[in-house]
Figure (cartoon, rainbow, N blue to C red):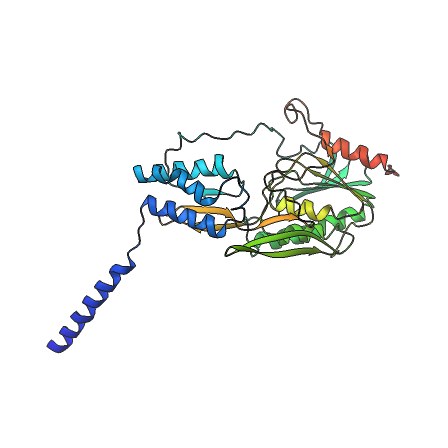
Length: 350
Protein backbone atom coordinates (compact mmCIF):
# COMPACT_ATOMS: atom_id res chain seq x y z
CA UNK A 1 0.00 0.00 0.00
CA UNK A 2 2.75 2.44 0.89
CA UNK A 3 4.42 2.34 -2.56
CA UNK A 4 0.97 2.85 -4.12
CA UNK A 5 0.22 5.87 -1.88
CA UNK A 6 3.63 7.33 -2.59
CA UNK A 7 3.03 6.92 -6.31
CA UNK A 8 -0.38 8.63 -6.11
CA UNK A 9 1.11 11.49 -4.09
CA UNK A 10 3.90 11.87 -6.65
CA UNK A 11 1.46 12.15 -9.58
CA UNK A 12 -0.81 14.50 -7.59
CA UNK A 13 2.12 16.86 -6.96
CA UNK A 14 3.02 16.77 -10.66
CA UNK A 15 -0.59 17.55 -11.62
CA UNK A 16 -0.83 20.47 -9.19
CA UNK A 17 2.47 21.94 -10.31
CA UNK A 18 1.51 21.62 -14.01
CA UNK A 19 -1.98 23.00 -13.51
CA UNK A 20 -0.50 26.31 -12.39
CA UNK A 21 0.43 26.92 -16.02
CA UNK A 22 -3.26 26.76 -16.98
CA UNK A 23 -4.40 29.57 -14.69
CA UNK A 24 -6.58 32.00 -16.64
CA UNK A 25 -6.61 35.73 -15.95
CA UNK A 26 -10.28 36.66 -15.70
CA UNK A 27 -9.77 40.28 -14.69
CA UNK A 28 -11.54 43.12 -16.56
CA UNK A 29 -8.13 44.13 -17.95
CA UNK A 30 -7.68 40.63 -19.40
CA UNK A 31 -11.14 40.78 -20.96
CA UNK A 32 -10.27 44.19 -22.39
CA UNK A 33 -7.26 42.63 -24.09
CA UNK A 34 -9.34 39.66 -25.27
CA UNK A 35 -11.87 42.00 -26.84
CA UNK A 36 -9.12 43.66 -28.87
CA UNK A 37 -7.75 40.29 -29.91
CA UNK A 38 -11.16 39.59 -31.42
CA UNK A 39 -11.22 42.96 -33.19
CA UNK A 40 -7.75 42.51 -34.65
CA UNK A 41 -8.37 38.94 -35.81
CA UNK A 42 -12.08 38.58 -36.58
CA UNK A 43 -13.53 42.05 -37.18
CA UNK A 44 -14.18 42.38 -40.91
CA UNK A 45 -14.06 46.20 -40.89
CA UNK A 46 -10.87 46.48 -38.86
CA UNK A 47 -9.25 48.50 -41.66
CA UNK A 48 -12.26 50.64 -42.62
CA UNK A 49 -11.96 53.19 -39.83
CA UNK A 50 -9.69 56.26 -39.62
CA UNK A 51 -7.75 54.44 -36.88
CA UNK A 52 -6.30 50.97 -36.44
CA UNK A 53 -7.60 48.59 -33.80
CA UNK A 54 -4.28 48.96 -31.96
CA UNK A 55 -4.63 52.74 -31.96
CA UNK A 56 -8.13 52.29 -30.56
CA UNK A 57 -6.76 49.99 -27.87
CA UNK A 58 -4.05 52.49 -26.92
CA UNK A 59 -6.71 55.16 -26.48
CA UNK A 60 -8.40 53.19 -23.67
CA UNK A 61 -5.71 50.96 -22.15
CA UNK A 62 -4.65 53.47 -19.50
CA UNK A 63 -8.27 53.81 -18.39
CA UNK A 64 -8.65 50.09 -17.68
CA UNK A 65 -5.23 49.97 -16.03
CA UNK A 66 -6.22 52.77 -13.62
CA UNK A 67 -9.54 51.15 -12.76
CA UNK A 68 -9.57 47.40 -13.35
CA UNK A 69 -13.32 46.92 -12.72
CA UNK A 70 -16.31 45.56 -14.62
CA UNK A 71 -17.96 48.97 -14.64
CA UNK A 72 -14.91 50.49 -16.27
CA UNK A 73 -14.76 47.68 -18.81
CA UNK A 74 -18.46 48.09 -19.63
CA UNK A 75 -18.04 51.84 -20.02
CA UNK A 76 -15.10 51.39 -22.40
CA UNK A 77 -16.77 48.72 -24.51
CA UNK A 78 -19.99 50.72 -24.81
CA UNK A 79 -18.05 53.85 -25.69
CA UNK A 80 -16.27 51.91 -28.46
CA UNK A 81 -19.55 50.40 -29.65
CA UNK A 82 -21.56 53.63 -29.70
CA UNK A 83 -19.07 56.34 -30.51
CA UNK A 84 -15.96 54.79 -32.06
CA UNK A 85 -16.84 51.87 -34.33
CA UNK A 86 -20.49 52.91 -34.80
CA UNK A 87 -21.11 49.55 -36.39
CA UNK A 88 -24.70 48.31 -35.91
CA UNK A 89 -23.40 44.74 -35.64
CA UNK A 90 -20.94 45.40 -32.80
CA UNK A 91 -22.45 45.02 -29.34
CA UNK A 92 -21.93 43.55 -25.89
CA UNK A 93 -24.63 41.46 -24.24
CA UNK A 94 -25.02 40.78 -20.55
CA UNK A 95 -27.83 40.27 -18.07
CA UNK A 96 -25.59 41.65 -15.36
CA UNK A 97 -26.35 45.27 -14.39
CA UNK A 98 -23.54 47.78 -14.59
CA UNK A 99 -23.30 51.54 -14.60
CA UNK A 100 -23.25 52.97 -18.13
CA UNK A 101 -24.42 56.47 -17.20
CA UNK A 102 -21.09 57.96 -18.23
CA UNK A 103 -21.36 56.64 -21.79
CA UNK A 104 -22.75 59.23 -24.24
CA UNK A 105 -25.56 57.55 -26.14
CA UNK A 106 -26.10 58.18 -29.84
CA UNK A 107 -29.76 59.00 -30.40
CA UNK A 108 -30.97 58.66 -33.95
CA UNK A 109 -32.95 61.56 -35.40
CA UNK A 110 -34.75 59.46 -37.99
CA UNK A 111 -38.16 58.57 -36.56
CA UNK A 112 -39.39 56.35 -39.37
CA UNK A 113 -42.29 54.12 -38.49
CA UNK A 114 -41.28 50.56 -37.56
CA UNK A 115 -44.26 48.78 -39.07
CA UNK A 116 -46.77 49.92 -41.70
CA UNK A 117 -50.41 50.32 -40.63
CA UNK A 118 -51.69 48.52 -43.78
CA UNK A 119 -54.51 51.09 -44.17
CA UNK A 120 -54.24 50.85 -47.97
CA UNK A 121 -54.11 47.05 -47.96
CA UNK A 122 -56.83 44.42 -47.85
CA UNK A 123 -54.91 41.97 -45.70
CA UNK A 124 -55.33 38.33 -46.59
CA UNK A 125 -52.76 36.51 -44.42
CA UNK A 126 -50.71 37.59 -41.39
CA UNK A 127 -48.03 35.37 -39.82
CA UNK A 128 -45.02 35.82 -37.55
CA UNK A 129 -42.97 36.41 -40.70
CA UNK A 130 -45.20 38.18 -43.22
CA UNK A 131 -48.35 40.16 -43.96
CA UNK A 132 -49.81 39.75 -47.44
CA UNK A 133 -52.82 40.94 -49.37
CA UNK A 134 -53.77 43.31 -52.17
CA UNK A 135 -54.04 47.07 -52.53
CA UNK A 136 -57.67 47.85 -51.74
CA UNK A 137 -58.05 50.50 -54.46
CA UNK A 138 -56.08 48.40 -56.97
CA UNK A 139 -56.68 44.72 -56.14
CA UNK A 140 -54.54 43.61 -59.08
CA UNK A 141 -51.51 44.91 -57.09
CA UNK A 142 -50.30 42.35 -54.57
CA UNK A 143 -48.57 43.31 -51.32
CA UNK A 144 -46.01 41.49 -49.18
CA UNK A 145 -44.54 42.84 -45.94
CA UNK A 146 -41.52 41.00 -44.53
CA UNK A 147 -41.28 41.43 -40.76
CA UNK A 148 -38.81 38.61 -40.09
CA UNK A 149 -36.74 36.03 -41.93
CA UNK A 150 -36.41 33.65 -38.99
CA UNK A 151 -36.79 33.59 -35.23
CA UNK A 152 -33.12 33.22 -34.39
CA UNK A 153 -30.61 35.88 -35.41
CA UNK A 154 -27.79 34.50 -37.50
CA UNK A 155 -28.66 30.82 -37.25
CA UNK A 156 -29.20 28.85 -40.44
CA UNK A 157 -30.49 25.84 -38.48
CA UNK A 158 -33.28 27.46 -36.48
CA UNK A 159 -36.76 25.93 -36.64
CA UNK A 160 -38.10 29.37 -37.49
CA UNK A 161 -36.35 29.36 -40.84
CA UNK A 162 -38.15 26.22 -41.95
CA UNK A 163 -41.50 27.73 -40.98
CA UNK A 164 -40.77 31.00 -42.76
CA UNK A 165 -39.64 29.52 -46.04
CA UNK A 166 -42.70 27.30 -46.19
CA UNK A 167 -44.98 30.29 -45.63
CA UNK A 168 -43.60 32.40 -48.49
CA UNK A 169 -44.60 29.78 -51.06
CA UNK A 170 -48.12 29.60 -49.62
CA UNK A 171 -48.51 33.38 -49.64
CA UNK A 172 -47.26 33.81 -53.18
CA UNK A 173 -49.44 30.99 -54.43
CA UNK A 174 -52.44 32.75 -52.87
CA UNK A 175 -51.55 36.08 -54.52
CA UNK A 176 -50.95 34.47 -57.91
CA UNK A 177 -54.37 32.79 -57.61
CA UNK A 178 -55.85 36.29 -57.16
CA UNK A 179 -54.31 37.14 -60.57
CA UNK A 180 -52.20 40.04 -59.33
CA UNK A 181 -50.31 41.75 -62.15
CA UNK A 182 -47.84 43.74 -60.00
CA UNK A 183 -46.37 43.55 -56.52
CA UNK A 184 -45.26 45.82 -53.69
CA UNK A 185 -42.57 44.13 -51.58
CA UNK A 186 -42.11 45.96 -48.28
CA UNK A 187 -38.79 45.48 -46.44
CA UNK A 188 -39.32 48.15 -43.74
CA UNK A 189 -38.33 46.00 -40.77
CA UNK A 190 -35.34 44.94 -38.74
CA UNK A 191 -35.40 41.42 -40.20
CA UNK A 192 -31.96 39.88 -40.00
CA UNK A 193 -30.34 36.50 -39.66
CA UNK A 194 -28.78 34.03 -42.04
CA UNK A 195 -27.64 34.97 -45.56
CA UNK A 196 -29.54 32.03 -46.99
CA UNK A 197 -33.09 32.97 -46.04
CA UNK A 198 -33.14 36.43 -47.70
CA UNK A 199 -31.78 34.78 -50.85
CA UNK A 200 -34.45 32.06 -50.65
CA UNK A 201 -37.22 34.69 -50.49
CA UNK A 202 -35.70 36.80 -53.28
CA UNK A 203 -35.55 33.70 -55.50
CA UNK A 204 -39.35 33.87 -55.65
CA UNK A 205 -39.08 37.25 -57.41
CA UNK A 206 -35.76 37.21 -59.25
CA UNK A 207 -35.95 36.60 -63.00
CA UNK A 208 -32.39 35.54 -63.91
CA UNK A 209 -29.20 34.00 -62.59
CA UNK A 210 -26.82 36.68 -61.39
CA UNK A 211 -24.18 37.51 -58.77
CA UNK A 212 -25.81 39.93 -56.35
CA UNK A 213 -23.40 40.22 -53.41
CA UNK A 214 -19.76 39.74 -52.47
CA UNK A 215 -18.59 38.76 -48.99
CA UNK A 216 -15.10 39.20 -47.57
CA UNK A 217 -14.11 37.06 -44.55
CA UNK A 218 -11.00 37.91 -42.51
CA UNK A 219 -8.37 35.17 -42.71
CA UNK A 220 -5.17 36.16 -40.93
CA UNK A 221 -3.96 39.47 -42.36
CA UNK A 222 -6.00 39.14 -45.55
CA UNK A 223 -9.55 38.33 -46.64
CA UNK A 224 -11.26 35.42 -48.35
CA UNK A 225 -13.71 36.45 -51.07
CA UNK A 226 -17.06 34.74 -51.63
CA UNK A 227 -19.51 35.61 -54.38
CA UNK A 228 -23.22 35.07 -53.77
CA UNK A 229 -25.29 34.05 -56.79
CA UNK A 230 -29.06 33.94 -57.06
CA UNK A 231 -31.32 32.08 -59.50
CA UNK A 232 -35.10 31.84 -59.93
CA UNK A 233 -36.50 29.03 -57.80
CA UNK A 234 -39.83 27.80 -56.47
CA UNK A 235 -43.27 29.35 -56.75
CA UNK A 236 -42.66 32.90 -57.83
CA UNK A 237 -43.85 36.25 -59.16
CA UNK A 238 -41.38 36.97 -61.96
CA UNK A 239 -43.21 38.51 -64.91
CA UNK A 240 -44.92 41.59 -63.49
CA UNK A 241 -43.54 44.86 -62.16
CA UNK A 242 -42.36 45.14 -58.54
CA UNK A 243 -41.89 48.15 -56.28
CA UNK A 244 -39.40 47.43 -53.48
CA UNK A 245 -39.73 49.52 -50.32
CA UNK A 246 -36.98 49.89 -47.71
CA UNK A 247 -36.00 52.47 -45.09
CA UNK A 248 -33.66 53.18 -42.17
CA UNK A 249 -34.89 50.11 -40.32
CA UNK A 250 -33.83 47.81 -43.16
CA UNK A 251 -30.65 46.19 -41.88
CA UNK A 252 -28.37 43.18 -42.23
CA UNK A 253 -30.43 40.33 -43.72
CA UNK A 254 -32.91 42.90 -45.00
CA UNK A 255 -30.09 44.60 -46.88
CA UNK A 256 -28.98 41.25 -48.31
CA UNK A 257 -32.54 40.90 -49.60
CA UNK A 258 -32.44 44.38 -51.15
CA UNK A 259 -29.13 43.59 -52.90
CA UNK A 260 -30.71 40.49 -54.43
CA UNK A 261 -33.97 42.17 -55.42
CA UNK A 262 -32.14 45.03 -57.16
CA UNK A 263 -30.95 42.49 -59.73
CA UNK A 264 -34.53 42.06 -60.98
CA UNK A 265 -35.23 43.75 -64.34
CA UNK A 266 -38.69 45.10 -63.53
CA UNK A 267 -38.10 46.58 -60.07
CA UNK A 268 -38.40 50.14 -58.76
CA UNK A 269 -36.77 50.89 -55.41
CA UNK A 270 -38.28 53.61 -53.19
CA UNK A 271 -38.01 54.66 -49.53
CA UNK A 272 -34.96 55.93 -47.66
CA UNK A 273 -31.40 54.89 -46.86
CA UNK A 274 -30.97 51.55 -45.09
CA UNK A 275 -28.98 51.09 -41.89
CA UNK A 276 -25.69 49.93 -43.40
CA UNK A 277 -25.28 46.89 -41.15
CA UNK A 278 -23.08 45.17 -43.70
CA UNK A 279 -21.94 41.64 -42.90
CA UNK A 280 -22.60 38.63 -40.73
CA UNK A 281 -22.27 38.48 -36.95
CA UNK A 282 -19.99 36.23 -34.95
CA UNK A 283 -20.38 35.83 -31.19
CA UNK A 284 -17.38 35.79 -28.85
CA UNK A 285 -17.27 35.14 -25.11
CA UNK A 286 -15.39 37.09 -22.49
CA UNK A 287 -14.19 35.30 -19.37
CA UNK A 288 -16.66 37.20 -17.15
CA UNK A 289 -19.66 35.69 -18.97
CA UNK A 290 -20.40 38.63 -21.24
CA UNK A 291 -21.02 38.01 -24.91
CA UNK A 292 -19.48 40.17 -27.63
CA UNK A 293 -20.98 40.37 -31.11
CA UNK A 294 -18.81 41.64 -33.95
CA UNK A 295 -19.08 41.78 -37.73
CA UNK A 296 -17.05 38.89 -39.12
CA UNK A 297 -17.72 39.43 -42.82
CA UNK A 298 -18.07 42.52 -44.93
CA UNK A 299 -20.70 42.55 -47.65
CA UNK A 300 -20.59 44.61 -50.81
CA UNK A 301 -22.53 45.14 -53.99
CA UNK A 302 -21.52 42.68 -56.71
CA UNK A 303 -19.24 45.36 -58.21
CA UNK A 304 -17.44 45.88 -54.90
CA UNK A 305 -19.28 49.07 -53.88
CA UNK A 306 -19.43 49.40 -50.10
CA UNK A 307 -22.54 50.22 -48.08
CA UNK A 308 -21.05 49.74 -44.59
CA UNK A 309 -22.58 52.38 -42.28
CA UNK A 310 -23.68 54.52 -45.25
CA UNK A 311 -26.52 52.17 -46.22
CA UNK A 312 -28.30 51.51 -49.51
CA UNK A 313 -30.11 54.57 -50.87
CA UNK A 314 -33.12 54.18 -53.20
CA UNK A 315 -33.27 56.38 -56.31
CA UNK A 316 -36.62 57.75 -55.11
CA UNK A 317 -36.67 59.02 -51.50
CA UNK A 318 -40.04 58.82 -49.75
CA UNK A 319 -40.70 59.03 -46.01
CA UNK A 320 -43.73 59.14 -43.77
CA UNK A 321 -44.16 62.23 -41.64
CA UNK A 322 -43.97 62.16 -37.84
CA UNK A 323 -47.75 61.98 -37.50
CA UNK A 324 -47.97 58.67 -39.35
CA UNK A 325 -49.49 56.03 -37.10
CA UNK A 326 -50.73 58.66 -34.64
CA UNK A 327 -52.90 61.29 -36.33
CA UNK A 328 -53.33 59.40 -39.60
CA UNK A 329 -52.62 56.02 -41.16
CA UNK A 330 -52.03 57.09 -44.73
CA UNK A 331 -48.75 55.43 -45.71
CA UNK A 332 -46.83 57.74 -48.06
CA UNK A 333 -44.57 54.90 -49.25
CA UNK A 334 -47.35 52.49 -50.18
CA UNK A 335 -49.23 55.35 -51.85
CA UNK A 336 -46.12 56.25 -53.87
CA UNK A 337 -45.61 52.60 -54.80
CA UNK A 338 -49.16 52.48 -56.18
CA UNK A 339 -48.56 55.70 -58.15
CA UNK A 340 -45.34 54.25 -59.61
CA UNK A 341 -47.13 51.11 -60.75
CA UNK A 342 -50.09 53.05 -62.16
CA UNK A 343 -47.67 55.24 -64.11
CA UNK A 344 -46.12 52.15 -65.70
CA UNK A 345 -49.48 50.94 -66.98
CA UNK A 346 -50.78 48.84 -64.11
CA UNK A 347 -54.53 49.51 -63.91
CA UNK A 348 -57.40 47.91 -62.09
CA UNK A 349 -59.01 45.55 -64.56
CA UNK A 350 -61.64 44.27 -62.14
